[in-house]
Image (cartoon, rainbow, N blue to C red; front, side, top):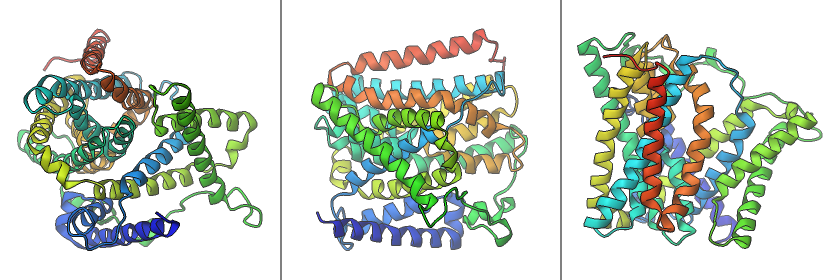
Length: 439
């Protein structure tokens, strides 16, 4: 590999991203499916790249790019997160218990299926079951993270399996989500239901009209000294470097504990953010710019992640993978709408369909489904979720960080039991708080 290999890979994926954006803006059926351009770019690279037809001169480094990009994404999180100050009360509490419990149950289900079914019948590694929660609830970012973590232990197939699960999840989130919205309209469960044709053009095509153009961030430095974008990107790169150094240092001191770079970068980001606040240097950071940089990393992460899927591995695992993903979809569907109906006091369907979108696809999928079922944002779903996620994120990072270590050490079943018990405890806590209501 040479530096020009990176230029060629990024250039090809960038061209495919632009073509995907053009297709999303012009083709009606892609708009109705809410397929993001990054996923279209990834599919195109997968089909025409070295993994299939071999027409595009992409290198074999896509998986490595995804590992670096997820570390950059996690480096941004501590710089943009804000502490909740008690807003929302019981509404946020319900969303937190509901979302956190569903996440834990999904990881428990994947672990149980891997340990008790897939490994026993098809002889695959028990960790295969984790591809489902990593891809569904976590999306392509978590799929890249857990693939990178398992690769450190010599389990290279996990990246492809998790990326496949994330891709299947995005498609299923839209198809089943739209079916649930139509069903809710017939049964009268939806309170604010809109139509696809009523959605604003920028949501359907992804192109803002001129009157809706907005600034992408705030400049805090004079360009004659240091460009503000350089400062913000440099801070992210510094945190990522610190995370890489921490990961390698731990691996050198304790070889059996190989923490992934993304989780170490998150910890480094917390420390750097604290230092910036203490020195008031955080005033020069622009959260809008940081958010846009995170979006750039995520777009390329999805494209490179899908392009890195190895079809020979998918074919080899096709039967156990199909069983895993199908059971995961049905169980997630049951939890999201059965528990959602009972725990949310208001707008239960709108909050449930949003959760379905991000439990199986991405946050963007959840927002897209929410905008159809709640076009005027009357449910307050996103506000509740924004505060609840501040408490959900550390648990998600811990799951992705320690699950590979525990499964490799033979503690996979114990890990699954702990997740199930923690999820059940959350449901008991929610009931004790009076957050559940009778049907």
